[in-house]
Image (cartoon, rainbow, N blue to C red; front, side):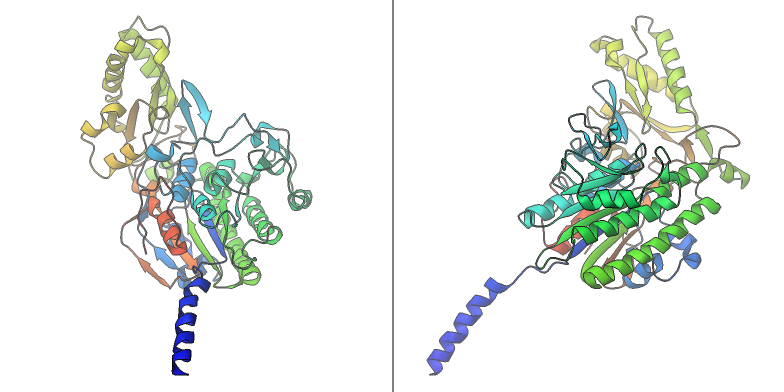
Amino acid sequence: MKKQFLALAIMLLALLPCGAQVSRPKLVVGIVVDQMRWDYLYYYYNDYGTGGLRRLLSEGFSYENTQINYSPAVTAVGHASIYTGSVPALNGITGNWFWENGKNVYCCTDTTVRSVGSNSAEGQMSPRRMLGTTIGDELHLATDFRSKVIGVALKDRAAILPAGHSADAAYWWDTSAGHFVSSTFYMNDLPQWVKDFNKANHTKPNFNIKTNDEGVTMTFKMAEAAVDNERLGQTDGQTDMLTVSVSSTDAIAHKYSTRGPENKSVFMRLDHDLAGFLNYLDEKVGKGNYLLFLTADHGASHNYNFLKQHRIPADGWDYDKSVAELNKGLREKFPQLTANPVLGEDNYHFYFNDKAYAPADKQKVVDAAIALLRKDKQFLWVVDNNKIMESTVPEPIKSRLVNGIFPGRSGDITVVTRPQVFGAEVSPTYRGTQHGQPMAYDVHIPFILYGWNVEHGDSTKPLNITDIAPTICAMLHIQMPDAAIGNSAR
């Protein structure tokens, strides 16, 4: 009898691993707040309610020293890097716009697809220019594509790049239509629930909801509708993912800067709507059943006129003027040039027109351009991107510049302006702000984990934006994205 019991016990123990499952949350939610400086967590802290950002801080885990380890710090790059765990040098997203084969292209434009939900070019988008997988792609691979992955944002790039290549859907706002759309990269027709949502939630065509607080509310309403109608996090044994990006915080700050009633208003709306969204997830998915992280794609500089009023060195840089003066100076020095040698400037890079000179003359033209640019006292460093490893730029600025260069999509020369000098309209009445520099105000971002298997706490240990994806993947017990260079923070 004892032998029979022993044999039965051994058999049961042998069967236990077969019934075990990898522990994962029902739903992963990634929230990116566009242009959220890290210090907004505390600058507005006393004005926040208890259910939104303060709930995340009081119950979640905040990594207080998370920084961007590449340049430029702009929207497309930030969203791609958060979810790929990588940098432009590897994932290929070097800016919102960049020159490729002498043509200025947008990061997500894809003329091989058509808009779904409208007839405009605003829907002709896909993630095809991004290299490497995302968290969602790896979740799909780990679950044999049983998981659902959906991206939602007002900005197309903020919905498309985070959701990844294999996403079940991505939805963004078509301003010309006044509602959410997608593209044939994902589907041939909008689901009925999206059509119903658009019918009940829309604006007049060409109304820019991104520059209105209502854009925050519309984003969270669409996110909730996706959770509800796609049953995200509500299928037994399945882990789904929802990526959400709040775009209005960026659009409003660009117009009104980092201080003042407009910026405060949009962050109060963010806090209010985030509280409602968390309560919704508690009810629909269950508190403790979802893993949520909140971060930002970049920070922002304070308005230079505002800083000047307080005797803090700051200014604007007229990049169009620099391009014009550079072309003028180079054509005077090289009269044999057949066209302007500089195509333009973007992301603090100068792009050169290879059709304007013989291949053997390019280095001479670039060297002359560097000499001319170095005369401008607004620049701390002017660097030949082909010789950047030989430059005297100090760390960590040098590494950020190197990580931002992707051959064929980056410019020939990078400039680093003085702190608080950024590319913008140069006027004593200018109210707005910009971002993109490798400086603290642009690269210091929030990163908070909340919910499933997250204990309350905080840390000031150094972390990079590229560590976010490996951290989430480690918690999910899935492989990190294939171009990732970061490390898990846990």
